[in-house]
Amino acid sequence: MTARRPASSDRVPSDRVPAGAAPNGPAPADQAPGDPAGASPRASAPVVAADLAAVPETALWTLYHRAVEAARPDTVLPDPKAVELVARIDYPFAERFGGGGGLQAQLQALRVACFDREVADFLTRHPRGTVVCLGEGLETQFWRVDNGRADWLSVDLPELISLRERLLPAGPRQQLLACSVTDPSWADEVDPAQGVLITAQGLLMYLRPGEVRDLIAGCAERFPGGTLVLDTVPRWFSALAVQGKLRDHGYQAPPMPFGMDAAERQKLRTAHPAVAEVRDVYPSGGRGLLGALLPAGAWLPVVSAKRPSVVALRFADRRP
Image 1: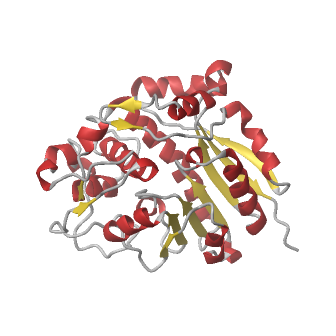
Image 2: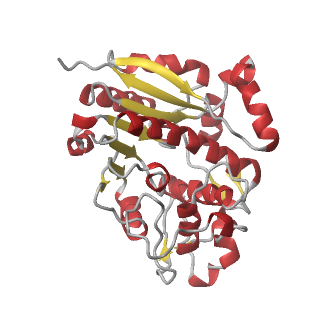
Image 3: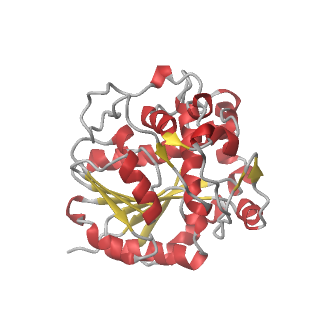
């Protein structure tokens, strides 16, 4: 799939800036770049064109839905940086992804919040540790949970790192690395001395099953005592994507070769002997009907077994 590069005439403000953005708007313009409190560029910052296709384009899809949810006064995920980025990117968000809002945006935010909780807990235990974000895209987690002391490494494809450099240039404790996540050389950039947590958010479903196993095994081998937090889509959803049946408005989701039902998560132990623990990270704090139904999804067998899942893997510490 090839995405059309939007012309400047497509840049309709109401299509890019989610309605109601003011309650969670950007931080003051004079905040220092890289500040974890949520700094934003000057109001006059140039609009940046985004010309992405296939899997890289999913970074724009997730960003948009996160921003739409963040713009609500009752949001489940305050994320002013996401709202700011949607306003700055030259891309027909509403045309490609629909008006946004409702169930889809909240589901995305609740998934992201699972990762935020895991990272925040890691930074409490390892305040000077390293957070490695594989396939980070335009995720803005650093500005939501950074503690001011940890190191952050973002690993992604060259076209996404290039876009991220223009929109979210690295601060003193951040590093951007243009590298495929299936290339194990990215691990050479990580100092594990103070602890390591790796996130693979919205990533593994686009890899082949063998690549997923190799990635988990590589992390377990290189980072004893570390943690990998990942998410998966269920097999039925993966099958629909592979068949090209996940389409909404002007956007068709790319194939997702890797699917895993939530009930299968313990199989991840077989990727490497050092996978010591496999733990479900269940979403919480939903709004409205979704919030009322979420608890049931954790214990109803039919729903729980076939739902998307966020999983934390802990690797055994083999150091003397």
